[in-house]
Image (cartoon, rainbow, N blue to C red):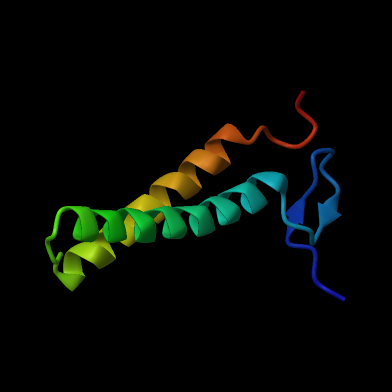
Length: 80
């Protein structure tokens, strides 16, 4: 059985991730996909080859930004 590492909206110990964490995790996945598509479009339509370092930095920044935004937009559990 998993050890309780957080609390739910009422304050009871739980090992389940909170909805804000799930939203941020999903946001990171979406951010990676959006970043990949954006880099592809820039390189294809702009007919330029971005350096790998720029592609990597774009991936990290877009993923982190969308993960933060998704976690920020998601209301905490128990708040209507």
